[in-house]
Image 1 (cartoon, helix red, strand yellow):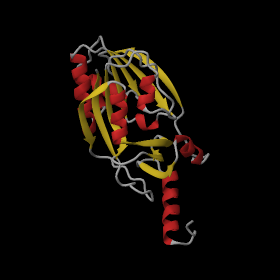
Image 2 (image 1 turned 135 degrees about the vertical axis):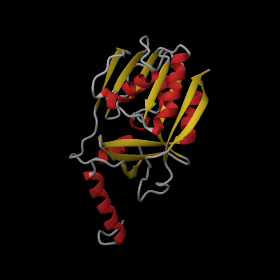
Image 3 (image 1 turned 90 degrees about the vertical axis):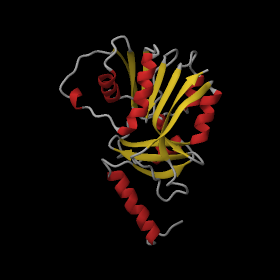
Image 4 (image 1 turned 90 degrees about the horizontal axis):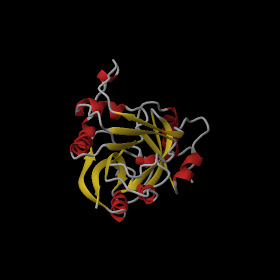
Length: 244
C-alpha cells in the first residue's frame, strides 16, 4: 500500500481529484473485477447516466436551425459508409443503441439524403442499462455505447429470437491483450466502463453467427488508464459484421 506522502501516492491523489472534477476531457481511472465493482467505487457526488428509453420515428426531410449545425467527425465516416450501403441494399429497420441525443441519426440522415422509408429506432442509453428489443431489425448500430452495457454483445445477441442482419460498431473501447473494467469521466458524467479484449469481442460475434465485413481503428480521442498495467494500450475501434 502506498504511503500518502510518496510521490506516486500524491500523483494518484491529484489525478483522482482531476478525474472527479472533470467536465470536458475523456478520462479513465482504476481497474476493477467487473462493472458492478466499478460502480460501487463511484463517489455519491458523481453523476452517472441512468435509464434507457427507446424512441421510434420515421426518417423525415424536416430540419430545424440546430440540425443545420451538426458536424460529422472523421471517426464517423466508416460507419456512415456502411449505414449508407445498408440502406442501398434494402435494409430499412435500424436500431441505434446508445443514440440518446439523436445527433448521429440527424447528421447521418442529412448526409444520406433522408430516405423516407427508413425506420430508425433510437435507444437512449444511460447508466449502462441494456437497450431496446433489437430482435429482427435489419441493422444494429452501436456508436460508443457497447463499453457501458451491463451485458457483453454476445450476451445481448443470445437473448434475441431473431438476430440483426448486420451490426455496425464504432468508437468501441478495446484492448489488444485483456479486458479492463474501469471508470470513465467525461461530459456525460462518471460511468463504469468495459474496455474489452479485442479478440474476445470478435470471438463473441463469430460465435453468434456473424462474419466480419470490415474493421477499422478510430483515430483521434485516446484512451489511457493511468497507474494500471497496460493502461496505455487501449484504443477505439469499429467494424461491420453480417449474419451468416
